[in-house]
Length: 178
Image (cartoon, rainbow, N blue to C red; front, side, top):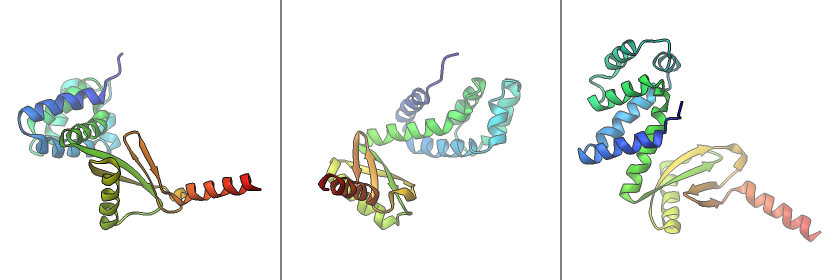
């Protein structure tokens, strides 16, 4: 069985959304659908090869009709037929990437030791914008091992302003100088 690419689904959805001028609708729909994939019982049910397709479709329609568009419900039904509903989070992420690319926005993965305030996120976004030359959308992660500062990845660019790296560099210099 060939693996199903979330990126291909996201690209198809993006094309449909662009043609129908419904990008914002799809962003919301995919967020709702992706949040459903965090429910292990739901995923186990809709991805089970033992459950008949018509039963899966019935549950999906009952669960989402009225809260997302008919096309989003159809996407979920299609994925359930392939036992691949768990791809919805990846599809949502890939769709967001297509939207950002279309708007000329770069996504930055930022790791810090502590949660950033909204003002700190904006300041960091502005600084990364100066470096990259494009608007930046930040996704933050917390990893206490960075000690302080941040590590940001924007595409192929890595900006490491972490205390951990500075301490490691100082240690290397001290050992080298000794």
